[in-house]
Image 1 (cartoon, rainbow, N blue to C red):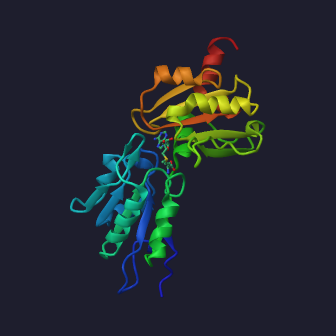
Image 2: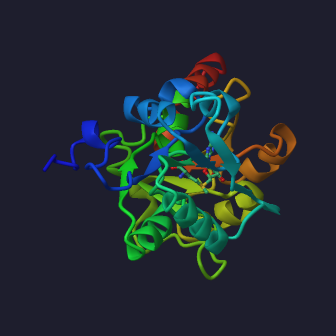
Image 3: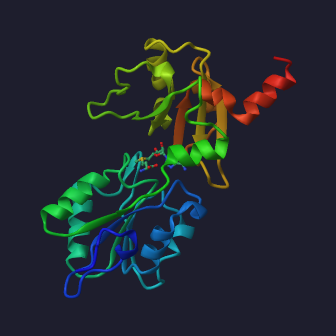
Length: 264
Ligand SMILES: C[S@@+](CC[C@H](N)C(=O)[O-])C[C@H]1O[C@@H](n2cnc3c(N)ncnc32)[C@H](O)[C@@H]1O
């Protein structure tokens, strides 16, 4: 019996069995940030179900005759409900073809990958996960923001701006201790900043919004909690964006340069 937990065996099923559905992370956008395992999975795919944020260069890695289905959601444009995605995945898996479920960033971080995995497994379909570079890591690297830094941030916290009850779940920890990264907060920057200040972060805490991180059209807007909403509204468009807040954001090279230029 082959050891199916080895990453090298992810693409193969024991003889007579259907291949596992591969839940693959496509990374934050730049195709160079795909893992080798993701590239191999795509190159062997017969069916690819992908999210709206996955770009054409990445999709092009699948064989030309592979079936491609966009099941993605972008705010304001819900192309398919989660239950319908689950049902479609199951139907495709049952055809016995090699199915890749391609999700932006990492499939198990704010991507509902866990629900898709549970659904397939509950119906007897094996699932393997190929991790991806999550947007926080891609954007931090691109902007030159260390997510942790001795003396400034002992950790990093990843939040969604859209909690299950519609609220902003910030947890109970001291926000100043960690770099705070907020996903899906594009249309709630003011509310995010206000909530963080209400929880004790000073208004002059560095804040950065990165739009289309790692892609050629990446844009960054730097400010403080007090003014980041206004600046982002003036400087950014409507691409996917992350909000990063904390003293580590102050280490971003451009800020250091600006401070030096102005004699601070
Ligand atoms: C549904 S979540 C998926 C997160 C993904 N699973 C991950 O690990 O990055 C989508 C959110 O991720 C963030 N995001 C994804 N790609 C991004 C990028 N290239 N630049 C900035 N933010 C991005 C945005 O906050 C976007 O609203």
